[in-house]
Image 1: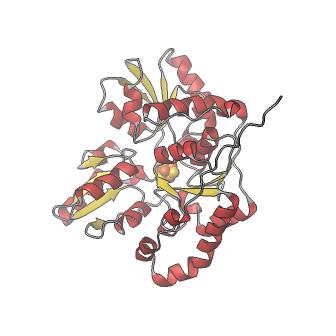
Image 2: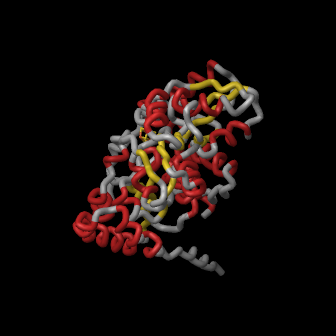
Image 3: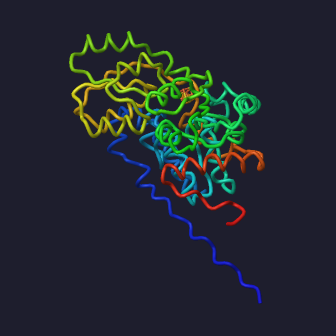
Length: 345
Ligand code: SF4
């Protein structure tokens, strides 16, 4: 006799978590919010209808971040939540490599990106062929790649990392030398914290590499007592001026915990807008370096994406399976359970 397996229970999406009107009202001027409300309502209705969630990176604008995002976070948090969710559809409000990572982690789900042209200067700085050449040049040396890479690159490396866990990932490897790619600055920052030799690729984030140490010294002179917190994608002379260096999630937690009187967050500028509303007692000094790729994602495009179920992100299954091993190894180092392989579901 054959038996039909019980269906996997589906998690209900709690839209009350996604929509925080009091925070949205603080973050967005009333007239603007009123004008956006029909779009916000339409997105939230479609999410419920399609069992969809919106994963939003910390660099999204406040109208996305505070109204339609179900999960907000840095690359690591988004990868972990993509692995955990039982939604059928994931809308990735971020850049293309993040949507690819979600697809690699959840090959049986529909992953949508509201604008497929949302790229990243780091992801476009290296190819799978480059990684194969590095392996020939440094035989036996393990390769770590930042998640800001294409699926093709993730498929060629031993393990991925994010700026949250880069040091832990490097330290987890049983080798005195590690190839780290593609971000030369994140690699340089990791090298200052480990005894391992770090062999770096020459990529850079076009947003963070524009900051300078001289600019930060000017902030110190102009705002006595200011705290400077910086993302490790910044050049070394910038990090040398910082009171704290960490991922976007680390920076947000640092501000919430330490409540400095004045702070400058040396990263993409939407993050200061998003955090400011949650820490009204902290004066944010806001340098404005915008990521043109992140800014391609808008509420209107999210709505269009959910209405038309476009643009679906697809990854060649053979590439995805190899890339998934690198992502799963990272998630294991970060304490997140690796998801069940799709074939076993
Ligand atoms: S901020 Fe930098 S690392 Fe992030 S998506 Fe933009 S270019 Fe890429």
